[in-house]
Image (cartoon, rainbow, N blue to C red; front, side, top):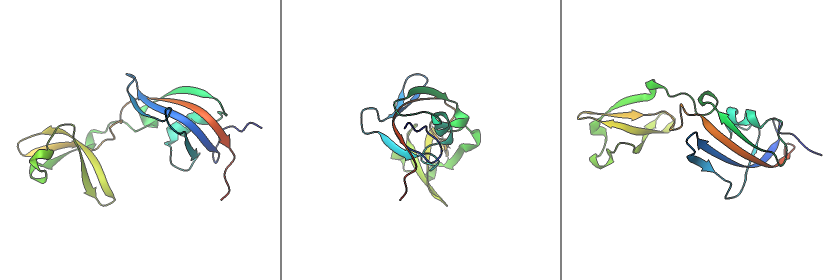
Length: 146
């Protein structure tokens, strides 16, 4: 019996995330497939939505727009931080710096270094980008009872 992907099903798949220019951000096609339960929060909703109804053996490629992937780039997520908060050797444009906030760590990318301030971009690095989502479904099974 063939089971289609739906909320609660367990899915084993190979996937690749790439940018429109072909740069591969993440892929497990060369390693073990990933397994997740649809609706458990391990996959962004925009990625789960395109899988619905697929079955074992299906191979597809989808373009996921930013609002269904990592969100739009938000200019309010670019913050100025006093330069004195950084060690001089850490001040490199493009470097990822981890900040403590009330919920734990928040990574930010240094985008500009001034005499008194450092501009940090707290947007997800893939925010504002279309993501090419390529998948091969290995298996779909009913919800596992533990």
